[in-house]
Image (cartoon, rainbow, N blue to C red; front, top):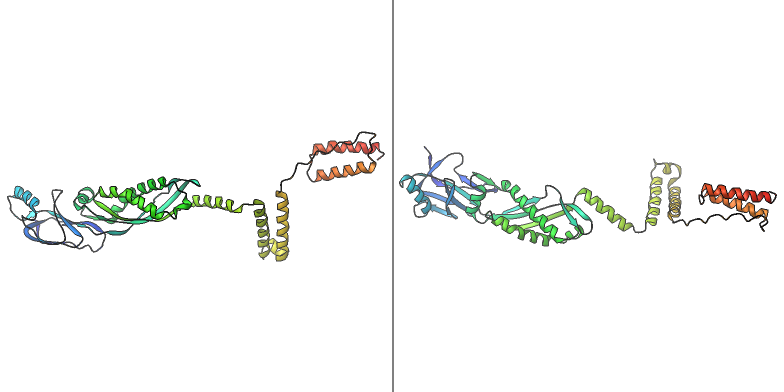
Length: 342
């Protein structure tokens, strides 16, 4: 035989229960004249055969056929008006559930006006409350004895991420501009979510974006691009890097530069290296092709021909002319030198 309950009430000690069903784990019967105690921010809903019937707001209620007419009518039809009668009571917590967390489980890919396609992570918080207890109980938690914020979190996160991604894509702003747009974005996402929450009997009270940040790979690509833009003069940057590297080596007692040349010499060598690199990176004008020797009988003296041969050797040693050109011209100048008695 089911236990008869004369006082029906529930106190949420966790602060996380949205719905709590009485009885828990056993059936009980209710008799007319029993006391129903509904705490502030609660609504009590009578269920019978899986159907939500009469509801009560905060206060102490004496159950009579007058204040539960729908339930009394069903009982009268089923039992001939006899009491006690079997029923269930769902206590729905109507207070705001604050500081609920949302965030991306996977990075969201969006098109960025400055960097192209980027992958972002985002997180924040929101607050909601039950607006239509009968609707919420029937659609979301009607068959569960206890329904908490944690059980609702995953469902709501999916809805939030869909609307957040839509709003973020519509903004057409660069990642660099988003930090100053959190308030505007939050307002847009909240407006998009209003109908989704209302459809299940909830009201979204607040929505906040705490952070929007690129993934590690995206952040690295952005940093590299920003560094290139900041460098500007690549020649000056390479000179600076070379000088700093040699200076660091001189400051390192265990390094080769530190052991051999010391701080002053290391810095000097760094400056020399920077100058050499600067000269090497300057565009080198194309060397003109060496002139052919003057024809036999010309006005060139033996000393002038020897000077031309020496100049040809120097240009070849500097890499200014190819080996084929050097061999061809060298042979001609040697022949001219022999003609002059060399």
